Length: 622
Image (cartoon, rainbow, N blue to C red):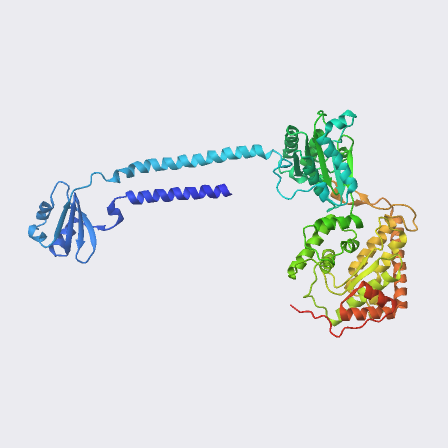
């Protein structure tokens, strides 16, 4: 589009230039003054209207006393006096008139006009064909470059952006040890060859989004100091058939020329999904690209110094041929960080930020279970934004705690004001969640209760586990069911009806209860998994789910799900009825203060009274 505009502007300029040349070279009589017959000239001369005459060859330029200008013509071989005598005029008619006689300009450029009318069209056609041939040549070169790999080259000392090394990655100890072997092999391959060892050709990084797969690959690129070719899986596949496989060949050829080298393929599942038999007739573009990768990784050429590192968060969708020994035979799992890992990640992201003395990163790490490395980086950035917005010179603990809630639930909606009735419903709803969580030993610890709107919620109860855990028991799941139903039951108990505020809780309850029955085998149906498996459809894995049980079992599953939810509801309602006064006390404090922290909530739950503030927090309606 840019080249087209440039060519268009060039053509316009050429036409303007041609117009200017014609304007300069055209005869003067065509530029100005009107031509009159010689008879009219003699008539005006006889009537004394003319002031001045200029004779130039056959041309007679006339200036009238009124200031008007015109011109006329006479015979070329006849003088002006002879021509006037033929019309009955004599020299006396010219006595009061200024007469100027000038020689005719023989060297005028008028003769160029016929020549230019021939040359200029030829020049325009020549320029037009020159532009066409130039674009055709550029298009041909782009056609060949279209088949080249669009991979970015790192590790040559010209890497742009921030460099990442292993010391800049907290946690992931096992993963770093695995990839360090790859770096050691590239730096000193003879040490492994002497022992008869063969370094894996492919390393697959598997983990949830944000766990550091791409960052770990960048660290390998900077640590190994060898050419590092990075590409995303979706960059292989294009509209035209065969482009993907051609780009794979181009990528591996380039990497082999620079060996030892590393190829990093991010989002491998974009091209590495399971191949479906009989679909596309073997000519489907993604399948051809996958076949080419398989051939390049473990084909006839065995002794190559090219190592392939790939990353994905959906390993179950990868083709088995990719995961067999000889290809991606080393799988590295990147899990979510634990408390110590989160604290280490927070320290790394806070290294260049001005922290106040009261900042406790350990407390922040304890309050962020389930956060990935990317979530923690976002948390620190949000805290810095809060501090800058408040014109502070340092980041304090309150900014970090507020940023946790923003990352989890969204920004605080100060303009979203609840009516008195809505505020009361939200207060009893959140008080129900918090009181049930405090009353069941297996439930999580309540850190904060609020009816300040955040994101899509009118209020929230922030509860965190007592200890870091990887495994959950049935009693903990049942406690979670009761806590989720706490708001629903509190509304029924107080208002004798329910609101739409419990919709999200009921959805989570239904999903959790179904998982207990079909996935975890914790129901009366026994240790059997009734989880639905992926079904094969015409378009592959996106077809849907397929049940592996009968209609009779389906009815029993529904009864078990109902039983889990009804028992949790009965237990929750019993606790709230028994502790109704406590529920009322917590809700009333919430209505007044809008937010209750952990220490204050525990005092309320134990029956202690909290001193009420005289003025409640003002909120401005926008």
